Amino acid sequence: MSKIDFMDLDGKVLRVFLTILEENSVSKAADRLGVTQSAISHTLSKLRVVLGDPLFIRSGQGLTPTERALSLKDPVQQVLDNMRALTEDRPFDPLSEEMVFHIATNDMPRELIFPQLLQKVRTEGVRLGLGFIPSGVPDPELLRSDRCQLMLTPLPPDGPDIFQKRILSSPLMIYYDGTRRSPPDSWETYCETEHVEVRFADGRSSRAVMRGVDQNQIRPPTVTLPHFNAITSFVKGGDLISTDTALMKHGPLHALDCAPLPFACDPVSIYMVWHQRSSNDPAHRWLRDRIEAIAATLQD
Image (cartoon, rainbow, N blue to C red; front, side, top):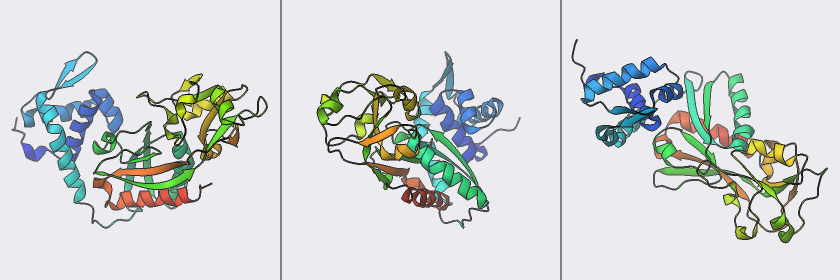
């Protein structure tokens, strides 16, 4: 068998390496990349020969990276970033190529912006694929590792390599079932009312967007949920309330009644966030421009 050398490495092989490193699983890496497990296993075998290291050791239900694999994470990511940079000045025609983007966002931006965007560009003949992951309170490593290429979030992460732009601003509202109750009419009654709250996988709360109020006075939530789409089921038909942006009325909470907060609270801004490697990529700029154009039509 002929010796495999570094010339056998390409961007796809390196992307497979990073994905296995992030997922600690061949099957999960295959699912994420949309290929078969055998294809991932074949690529991993090639990498092991080229790099002279097992890279990953089976441990329980997953894989544990070796010290060599861990040391390669940043250099491999840098190589991929440099390869991407080679295309930044390329001629770009959205009709001439197929584009796929992975986006971290929660329910409201996803439902309000992207169905409309996809339908519009498909009528233009653009071949666009979209994959979504929940952003929760987002971690900049999602962008740095290229697990997603864009975030839409009210809580943009910081970093010298992280870019952001505000695309939406919306006041907070009380959502409730008007057939069962009236909305709280004062700060005191609001604090005493039982409510539903979204709590993300890392334990942080959606209440983080409430600025300028003393949240310690608000009673703990009666129900905590993993995403916004589940709120209506718990509020409809009962006396619980939820506090979310006015834009939710056009998305996940359209079946509920809503009323302004009975106290002063800053509006919530939604930011588009990306890594510096994507700033000058023409396809990425095209997507950002399309998102911003749709967001401009949604302002309350």
